[in-house]
View 1 (cartoon, rainbow over the protein chains, first blue to last red):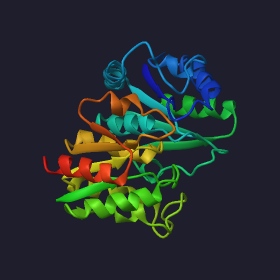
View 2: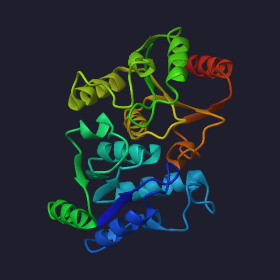
View 3: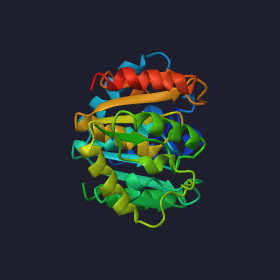
View 4: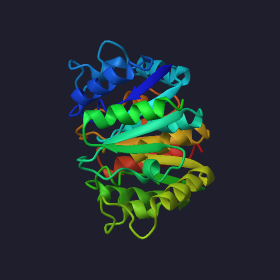
Length: 138
Length: 138
């Protein structure tokens, strides 16, 4: 299974360690195409060695290739929102996860969207349970 | 011309007064479907009288109806990113505007995306110029 994991980069890296935990769990189910999202050395400036148009084309190719898109949506992010909007238009399965302690209310474009599954979690054990249940249906 | 204006709600309302200025300018060119984005009484909790699924269905219907999508992207927002991703999949013309003083670097999904036009502005006069030039090409 090819998994596109989406998390905030330029929107803010406060949850980077959580993203890394997500990627570790997701790796048990298949290939995570976007392992760099969990990289500690990746700041909110984003990737600097490659151009923005390279990043865009590469990431959209990964979304097209993927069997499923899993997004951590606790931090508002234009890129993550965009990727979800595109993934839906490509009929990909989309799961959004949000910390119960997230500061901001989740967008109606996600939480009011019957196409997308949204789940909340408190602990990384919850994440493991939610991901296992979801990915076993793919 | 039907114009879908996108701005942050649950991502943060710091730019609400700017959104109102955008809507005033856009109203000279056509019907702004999303006038509530500029509403001072709309907080970052979002609309409370209608359900999230109502908001989602209504807003997506407006994107489908629109001739053009104009997004203010200075504040990271999952909803605005989602709307841009969907608008692109519907082959809508999309213009993103960003304050030169915006705190966060813009996502590569927007700035690296050849389909989308991105412009920066310092003053509301810049906004008027950018919008006029763009909308006259629609």
